[in-house]
Amino acid sequence: MGGTFAVRAAGFCYPFLPYHLDALQLSTRTVGQLLAVFGLGWFTGSVLWGWMSDKVGRRPTLTAAMAMAAIALPLLAQAHAPTAVAGAAFVAGMAYDAPRPVLSAAIAERYADDKNRAHLNATRNFIINVAAATAGASGGVLADSVGIPALLWANGTVCALFGVLAWLTLDNSTSTAADQRPAGLHPQDVLRDTRLAVLLLTSLATLTAAASLFSSLPMLMARAGLSATDYGWAQTANAAAVLALSPLLNRWLSQRAHRGRPMTGLLALSALILGTSMGAAALASTVTGFSLLAALAVPGEVLAFVAAGDVLARISPPGAYGLYAGIWGTTLAGAVVIAPVLASWSLTHGGPNLAAATTLTCGVIGAALCWPLAALTRRAPTSLPGGG
Image (cartoon, rainbow, N blue to C red; front, side, top):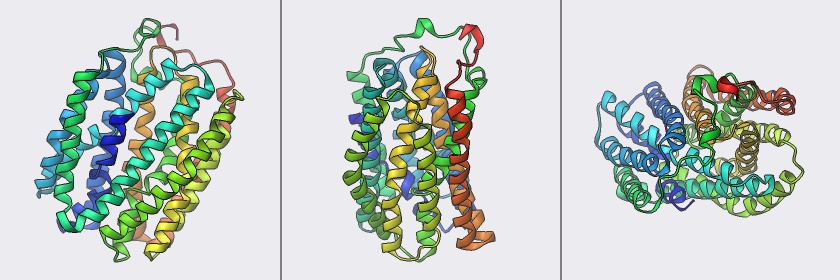
Protein backbone atom coordinates (compact mmCIF):
# COMPACT_ATOMS: atom_id res chain seq x y z
CA MET A 1 0.00 0.00 0.00
CA GLY A 2 2.78 2.41 0.93
CA GLY A 3 4.75 1.69 -2.22
CA THR A 4 1.62 2.06 -4.32
CA PHE A 5 1.01 5.49 -2.81
CA ALA A 6 4.60 6.61 -3.31
CA VAL A 7 4.90 5.71 -6.98
CA ARG A 8 1.48 7.15 -7.79
CA ALA A 9 2.02 10.36 -5.81
CA ALA A 10 5.21 10.85 -7.84
CA GLY A 11 3.56 9.45 -10.98
CA PHE A 12 3.89 12.61 -13.03
CA CYS A 13 4.46 10.73 -16.28
CA TYR A 14 0.89 9.81 -17.11
CA PRO A 15 -1.03 13.02 -16.25
CA PHE A 16 1.62 15.37 -17.67
CA LEU A 17 2.70 13.36 -20.68
CA PRO A 18 0.26 15.25 -22.99
CA TYR A 19 1.85 18.57 -21.94
CA HIS A 20 5.34 17.12 -22.38
CA LEU A 21 4.47 15.95 -25.88
CA ASP A 22 2.83 19.27 -26.69
CA ALA A 23 6.06 21.04 -25.69
CA LEU A 24 7.84 18.96 -28.33
CA GLN A 25 5.58 20.69 -30.89
CA LEU A 26 3.94 17.49 -32.04
CA SER A 27 0.57 17.44 -33.79
CA THR A 28 -2.64 16.52 -31.97
CA ARG A 29 -2.75 13.26 -33.92
CA THR A 30 0.82 12.34 -32.98
CA VAL A 31 0.20 13.20 -29.33
CA GLY A 32 -2.83 10.90 -29.33
CA GLN A 33 -0.80 8.11 -30.92
CA LEU A 34 2.06 8.42 -28.42
CA LEU A 35 -0.37 8.40 -25.50
CA ALA A 36 -1.83 5.24 -27.01
CA VAL A 37 1.67 3.72 -27.11
CA PHE A 38 1.97 4.41 -23.38
CA GLY A 39 -1.35 2.63 -22.94
CA LEU A 40 -0.17 -0.34 -25.00
CA GLY A 41 2.80 -0.66 -22.67
CA TRP A 42 0.41 -0.51 -19.71
CA PHE A 43 -1.68 -3.26 -21.35
CA THR A 44 1.34 -5.51 -21.82
CA GLY A 45 2.66 -4.91 -18.32
CA SER A 46 -0.67 -5.71 -16.66
CA VAL A 47 -0.67 -9.29 -17.92
CA LEU A 48 3.08 -9.74 -17.45
CA TRP A 49 3.20 -8.54 -13.82
CA GLY A 50 0.06 -10.46 -12.87
CA TRP A 51 1.48 -13.67 -14.32
CA MET A 52 4.88 -13.08 -12.71
CA SER A 53 3.27 -12.39 -9.31
CA ASP A 54 1.71 -15.87 -9.34
CA LYS A 55 4.63 -17.61 -11.00
CA VAL A 56 7.89 -16.14 -9.67
CA GLY A 57 6.83 -14.06 -6.67
CA ARG A 58 6.08 -10.51 -5.65
CA ARG A 59 9.61 -9.36 -4.84
CA PRO A 60 11.19 -10.00 -8.28
CA THR A 61 8.03 -8.77 -9.99
CA LEU A 62 8.00 -5.37 -8.31
CA THR A 63 11.78 -5.01 -8.44
CA ALA A 64 11.91 -5.69 -12.18
CA ALA A 65 9.01 -3.33 -12.91
CA MET A 66 10.47 -0.47 -10.88
CA ALA A 67 13.91 -0.96 -12.44
CA MET A 68 12.34 -0.62 -15.89
CA ALA A 69 10.59 2.58 -14.81
CA ALA A 70 13.79 4.02 -13.34
CA ILE A 71 15.47 3.61 -16.74
CA ALA A 72 12.60 4.54 -19.04
CA LEU A 73 11.38 7.73 -17.36
CA PRO A 74 14.66 9.69 -17.60
CA LEU A 75 14.94 8.57 -21.23
CA LEU A 76 11.42 9.83 -21.86
CA ALA A 77 12.35 13.17 -20.28
CA GLN A 78 15.28 13.65 -22.65
CA ALA A 79 13.93 12.13 -25.87
CA HIS A 80 12.80 14.37 -28.72
CA ALA A 81 12.46 12.14 -31.78
CA PRO A 82 8.99 10.55 -31.99
CA THR A 83 10.47 7.05 -32.32
CA ALA A 84 12.59 7.46 -29.18
CA VAL A 85 9.65 8.97 -27.30
CA ALA A 86 7.47 6.05 -28.36
CA GLY A 87 9.97 3.45 -27.10
CA ALA A 88 10.44 5.15 -23.75
CA ALA A 89 6.69 5.72 -23.36
CA PHE A 90 5.96 2.04 -24.02
CA VAL A 91 8.39 0.85 -21.33
CA ALA A 92 7.22 3.52 -18.88
CA GLY A 93 3.64 2.41 -19.52
CA MET A 94 4.59 -1.21 -18.81
CA ALA A 95 5.82 -0.28 -15.34
CA TYR A 96 3.26 2.37 -14.43
CA ASP A 97 0.58 0.14 -12.90
CA ALA A 98 2.74 -2.81 -11.83
CA PRO A 99 1.80 -2.70 -8.11
CA ARG A 100 -1.93 -3.09 -8.86
CA PRO A 101 -2.09 -6.80 -9.88
CA VAL A 102 0.40 -7.75 -7.17
CA LEU A 103 -1.65 -6.04 -4.46
CA SER A 104 -4.93 -7.33 -5.92
CA ALA A 105 -3.67 -10.90 -5.69
CA ALA A 106 -2.48 -10.43 -2.11
CA ILE A 107 -5.85 -9.03 -1.00
CA ALA A 108 -7.92 -11.66 -2.82
CA GLU A 109 -6.01 -14.65 -1.48
CA ARG A 110 -5.60 -13.45 2.10
CA TYR A 111 -9.12 -12.12 2.76
CA ALA A 112 -11.98 -14.44 1.84
CA ASP A 113 -14.56 -12.42 3.78
CA ASP A 114 -16.49 -10.16 1.38
CA LYS A 115 -16.73 -7.25 3.81
CA ASN A 116 -13.01 -7.18 4.68
CA ARG A 117 -12.01 -7.64 1.06
CA ALA A 118 -14.28 -4.80 -0.06
CA HIS A 119 -12.91 -2.58 2.72
CA LEU A 120 -9.31 -3.24 1.64
CA ASN A 121 -10.11 -2.73 -2.04
CA ALA A 122 -11.83 0.54 -1.16
CA THR A 123 -8.82 1.58 0.93
CA ARG A 124 -6.48 0.77 -1.93
CA ASN A 125 -8.65 2.73 -4.34
CA PHE A 126 -8.65 5.65 -1.90
CA ILE A 127 -4.85 5.55 -1.70
CA ILE A 128 -4.49 5.41 -5.49
CA ASN A 129 -6.97 8.24 -6.04
CA VAL A 130 -5.35 10.48 -3.44
CA ALA A 131 -1.90 9.70 -4.79
CA ALA A 132 -2.91 10.32 -8.41
CA ALA A 133 -4.60 13.57 -7.48
CA THR A 134 -1.52 14.54 -5.45
CA ALA A 135 0.63 13.96 -8.53
CA GLY A 136 -1.69 16.13 -10.60
CA ALA A 137 -1.88 18.91 -8.04
CA SER A 138 1.79 19.02 -7.05
CA GLY A 139 2.92 18.55 -10.63
CA GLY A 140 0.72 21.43 -11.72
CA VAL A 141 2.36 23.68 -9.14
CA LEU A 142 5.89 22.59 -10.07
CA ALA A 143 5.54 22.25 -13.84
CA ASP A 144 6.13 25.91 -14.67
CA SER A 145 9.02 26.37 -12.25
CA VAL A 146 11.05 23.16 -12.73
CA GLY A 147 9.70 21.86 -16.03
CA ILE A 148 8.04 18.58 -16.88
CA PRO A 149 11.31 16.75 -17.73
CA ALA A 150 12.40 17.32 -14.11
CA LEU A 151 9.12 15.81 -12.94
CA LEU A 152 9.80 12.71 -15.05
CA TRP A 153 13.25 12.39 -13.47
CA ALA A 154 11.66 12.63 -10.01
CA ASN A 155 9.12 9.96 -11.03
CA GLY A 156 11.94 7.63 -12.05
CA THR A 157 13.88 8.26 -8.83
CA VAL A 158 10.91 7.32 -6.63
CA CYS A 159 10.36 4.15 -8.68
CA ALA A 160 14.01 3.22 -8.20
CA LEU A 161 13.74 3.69 -4.43
CA PHE A 162 10.59 1.58 -4.26
CA GLY A 163 12.30 -1.14 -6.29
CA VAL A 164 15.18 -1.25 -3.81
CA LEU A 165 12.83 -1.34 -0.83
CA ALA A 166 10.73 -4.08 -2.45
CA TRP A 167 13.85 -6.21 -2.94
CA LEU A 168 15.06 -5.66 0.63
CA THR A 169 11.77 -6.02 2.51
CA LEU A 170 9.36 -8.31 0.66
CA ASP A 171 9.51 -12.08 0.84
CA ASN A 172 9.51 -14.03 -2.39
CA SER A 173 6.12 -15.63 -1.91
CA THR A 174 3.98 -16.65 -4.83
CA SER A 175 0.30 -17.42 -4.48
CA THR A 176 -0.37 -19.51 -1.38
CA ALA A 177 -2.94 -21.39 -3.47
CA ALA A 178 -0.54 -22.10 -6.31
CA ASP A 179 -0.95 -25.86 -5.92
CA GLN A 180 -4.69 -25.39 -6.65
CA ARG A 181 -4.08 -23.60 -9.94
CA PRO A 182 -5.58 -25.50 -12.89
CA ALA A 183 -2.82 -27.26 -14.80
CA GLY A 184 -1.69 -25.51 -17.96
CA LEU A 185 -3.68 -22.35 -17.22
CA HIS A 186 -2.55 -19.53 -19.50
CA PRO A 187 -3.91 -16.04 -20.19
CA GLN A 188 -5.56 -17.15 -23.44
CA ASP A 189 -7.31 -19.99 -21.57
CA VAL A 190 -8.61 -17.68 -18.88
CA LEU A 191 -10.42 -15.62 -21.52
CA ARG A 192 -12.70 -18.62 -22.07
CA ASP A 193 -14.27 -17.74 -18.73
CA THR A 194 -17.41 -15.98 -20.02
CA ARG A 195 -17.86 -14.08 -16.78
CA LEU A 196 -14.39 -12.60 -17.03
CA ALA A 197 -14.88 -11.74 -20.71
CA VAL A 198 -18.06 -9.76 -19.97
CA LEU A 199 -16.41 -8.09 -16.95
CA LEU A 200 -13.55 -7.03 -19.22
CA LEU A 201 -15.93 -5.47 -21.75
CA THR A 202 -17.93 -3.72 -19.04
CA SER A 203 -14.78 -2.42 -17.36
CA LEU A 204 -13.23 -1.29 -20.63
CA ALA A 205 -16.22 0.87 -21.50
CA THR A 206 -16.53 2.26 -17.96
CA LEU A 207 -12.83 2.93 -17.50
CA THR A 208 -12.52 4.61 -20.89
CA ALA A 209 -14.75 7.31 -19.44
CA ALA A 210 -12.71 7.30 -16.21
CA ALA A 211 -9.39 7.52 -18.08
CA SER A 212 -10.57 10.78 -19.60
CA LEU A 213 -9.78 12.43 -16.26
CA PHE A 214 -6.04 11.90 -16.80
CA SER A 215 -5.69 11.52 -20.56
CA SER A 216 -8.41 13.43 -22.39
CA LEU A 217 -8.89 16.16 -19.76
CA PRO A 218 -5.41 17.70 -20.21
CA MET A 219 -5.94 17.59 -23.98
CA LEU A 220 -9.28 19.34 -23.61
CA MET A 221 -7.85 21.94 -21.24
CA ALA A 222 -4.88 22.60 -23.52
CA ARG A 223 -7.32 23.04 -26.42
CA ALA A 224 -9.20 25.59 -24.30
CA GLY A 225 -5.96 27.55 -23.84
CA LEU A 226 -5.41 26.46 -20.24
CA SER A 227 -1.98 25.62 -18.83
CA ALA A 228 -0.51 22.69 -16.91
CA THR A 229 -0.98 24.75 -13.75
CA ASP A 230 -4.68 25.07 -14.54
CA TYR A 231 -4.84 21.31 -15.00
CA GLY A 232 -3.23 20.99 -11.57
CA TRP A 233 -6.15 22.96 -10.09
CA ALA A 234 -8.61 20.52 -11.66
CA GLN A 235 -6.68 17.65 -10.09
CA THR A 236 -6.67 19.49 -6.77
CA ALA A 237 -10.48 19.62 -6.91
CA ASN A 238 -10.50 15.91 -7.67
CA ALA A 239 -8.22 15.24 -4.70
CA ALA A 240 -10.42 17.29 -2.38
CA ALA A 241 -13.47 15.31 -3.47
CA VAL A 242 -11.59 12.04 -2.93
CA LEU A 243 -10.67 13.06 0.62
CA ALA A 244 -14.21 14.21 1.42
CA LEU A 245 -16.23 11.42 -0.19
CA SER A 246 -14.08 8.28 -0.08
CA PRO A 247 -14.38 7.56 3.68
CA LEU A 248 -18.17 7.78 3.47
CA LEU A 249 -18.35 5.71 0.29
CA ASN A 250 -15.91 3.11 1.61
CA ARG A 251 -17.96 2.58 4.76
CA TRP A 252 -21.13 2.23 2.73
CA LEU A 253 -19.50 -0.17 0.24
CA SER A 254 -18.21 -2.39 3.05
CA GLN A 255 -21.76 -2.69 4.38
CA ARG A 256 -23.07 -3.51 0.91
CA ALA A 257 -20.42 -6.22 0.46
CA HIS A 258 -21.59 -7.87 3.67
CA ARG A 259 -24.83 -8.77 1.87
CA GLY A 260 -22.92 -11.28 -0.23
CA ARG A 261 -24.25 -10.21 -3.64
CA PRO A 262 -21.99 -9.15 -6.55
CA MET A 263 -21.76 -5.37 -6.97
CA THR A 264 -22.86 -5.36 -10.61
CA GLY A 265 -25.55 -2.74 -10.00
CA LEU A 266 -23.02 -0.36 -8.48
CA LEU A 267 -20.69 -0.99 -11.41
CA ALA A 268 -23.49 0.10 -13.75
CA LEU A 269 -24.10 3.23 -11.68
CA SER A 270 -20.41 4.10 -11.80
CA ALA A 271 -20.41 3.83 -15.59
CA LEU A 272 -23.27 6.31 -15.86
CA ILE A 273 -21.64 8.77 -13.43
CA LEU A 274 -18.31 8.68 -15.25
CA GLY A 275 -19.84 8.87 -18.72
CA THR A 276 -21.95 11.87 -17.75
CA SER A 277 -19.31 13.85 -15.84
CA MET A 278 -16.43 13.26 -18.26
CA GLY A 279 -18.72 13.73 -21.25
CA ALA A 280 -19.73 17.11 -19.89
CA ALA A 281 -16.03 17.98 -19.46
CA ALA A 282 -15.71 18.09 -23.24
CA LEU A 283 -18.09 21.06 -23.19
CA ALA A 284 -16.33 22.96 -20.40
CA SER A 285 -14.13 25.98 -21.12
CA THR A 286 -13.00 27.38 -17.74
CA VAL A 287 -10.83 26.14 -14.89
CA THR A 288 -13.88 26.23 -12.62
CA GLY A 289 -15.92 24.10 -14.99
CA PHE A 290 -13.22 21.49 -15.48
CA SER A 291 -12.52 21.40 -11.74
CA LEU A 292 -16.18 20.89 -10.83
CA LEU A 293 -16.55 18.00 -13.28
CA ALA A 294 -13.31 16.40 -12.08
CA ALA A 295 -14.78 16.42 -8.57
CA LEU A 296 -18.14 15.04 -9.72
CA ALA A 297 -16.37 12.06 -11.30
CA VAL A 298 -15.03 10.85 -7.92
CA PRO A 299 -18.06 8.77 -6.81
CA GLY A 300 -17.96 7.01 -10.17
CA GLU A 301 -14.24 6.26 -9.79
CA VAL A 302 -14.66 4.82 -6.30
CA LEU A 303 -17.66 2.67 -7.25
CA ALA A 304 -16.04 1.42 -10.45
CA PHE A 305 -12.85 0.08 -8.93
CA VAL A 306 -14.41 -1.37 -5.79
CA ALA A 307 -17.33 -2.98 -7.63
CA ALA A 308 -15.11 -4.44 -10.35
CA GLY A 309 -12.70 -5.73 -7.70
CA ASP A 310 -15.59 -7.39 -5.88
CA VAL A 311 -16.76 -9.22 -9.01
CA LEU A 312 -13.19 -10.16 -9.96
CA ALA A 313 -12.47 -11.71 -6.55
CA ARG A 314 -15.67 -13.77 -6.79
CA ILE A 315 -14.84 -15.27 -10.19
CA SER A 316 -11.05 -15.78 -9.81
CA PRO A 317 -10.06 -19.44 -9.26
CA PRO A 318 -7.64 -20.23 -6.40
CA GLY A 319 -4.02 -19.88 -7.42
CA ALA A 320 -4.76 -17.55 -10.33
CA TYR A 321 -5.62 -14.33 -8.50
CA GLY A 322 -2.63 -12.48 -9.88
CA LEU A 323 -3.29 -13.67 -13.44
CA TYR A 324 -6.96 -12.67 -13.29
CA ALA A 325 -6.07 -9.31 -11.72
CA GLY A 326 -3.40 -8.73 -14.35
CA ILE A 327 -5.79 -9.55 -17.20
CA TRP A 328 -8.43 -7.27 -15.67
CA GLY A 329 -5.77 -4.57 -15.45
CA THR A 330 -5.58 -4.61 -19.24
CA THR A 331 -8.99 -2.92 -19.28
CA LEU A 332 -7.54 0.12 -17.55
CA ALA A 333 -4.61 -0.01 -19.95
CA GLY A 334 -6.97 -0.37 -22.88
CA ALA A 335 -8.95 2.60 -21.61
CA VAL A 336 -5.72 4.61 -21.50
CA VAL A 337 -5.19 3.71 -25.16
CA ILE A 338 -8.76 4.38 -26.27
CA ALA A 339 -9.56 7.58 -24.32
CA PRO A 340 -6.95 9.91 -25.88
CA VAL A 341 -7.39 8.43 -29.37
CA LEU A 342 -11.16 8.76 -29.08
CA ALA A 343 -10.83 12.31 -27.77
CA SER A 344 -8.39 13.42 -30.49
CA TRP A 345 -10.52 11.78 -33.22
CA SER A 346 -13.70 13.35 -31.85
CA LEU A 347 -12.16 16.81 -31.51
CA THR A 348 -10.72 16.60 -35.02
CA HIS A 349 -13.90 15.41 -36.74
CA GLY A 350 -16.72 16.89 -34.67
CA GLY A 351 -15.33 19.14 -31.98
CA PRO A 352 -16.38 19.19 -28.31
CA ASN A 353 -19.95 18.04 -29.01
CA LEU A 354 -18.77 14.78 -30.57
CA ALA A 355 -16.20 14.29 -27.79
CA ALA A 356 -18.97 14.65 -25.21
CA ALA A 357 -21.25 12.23 -27.06
CA THR A 358 -18.60 9.51 -27.44
CA THR A 359 -17.61 9.66 -23.76
CA LEU A 360 -21.24 9.48 -22.65
CA THR A 361 -21.78 6.53 -24.99
CA CYS A 362 -18.92 4.67 -23.31
CA GLY A 363 -20.64 5.08 -19.96
CA VAL A 364 -23.99 3.88 -21.29
CA ILE A 365 -22.40 0.80 -22.88
CA GLY A 366 -20.61 -0.02 -19.61
CA ALA A 367 -23.86 0.23 -17.67
CA ALA A 368 -25.80 -1.90 -20.19
CA LEU A 369 -23.23 -4.71 -20.07
CA CYS A 370 -23.69 -5.03 -16.31
CA TRP A 371 -27.06 -6.71 -16.90
CA PRO A 372 -25.65 -9.89 -18.53
CA LEU A 373 -22.71 -9.73 -16.10
CA ALA A 374 -25.12 -9.91 -13.15
CA ALA A 375 -26.79 -12.99 -14.61
CA LEU A 376 -23.49 -14.73 -15.34
CA THR A 377 -22.02 -14.19 -11.88
CA ARG A 378 -24.93 -16.10 -10.36
CA ARG A 379 -24.15 -19.18 -12.45
CA ALA A 380 -21.62 -21.97 -11.93
CA PRO A 381 -18.02 -21.11 -12.88
CA THR A 382 -17.06 -21.59 -16.49
CA SER A 383 -14.91 -24.67 -17.05
CA LEU A 384 -11.25 -23.88 -17.53
CA PRO A 385 -8.43 -26.04 -18.89
CA GLY A 386 -7.04 -28.44 -16.38
CA GLY A 387 -10.31 -28.94 -14.52
CA GLY A 388 -10.78 -25.36 -13.18
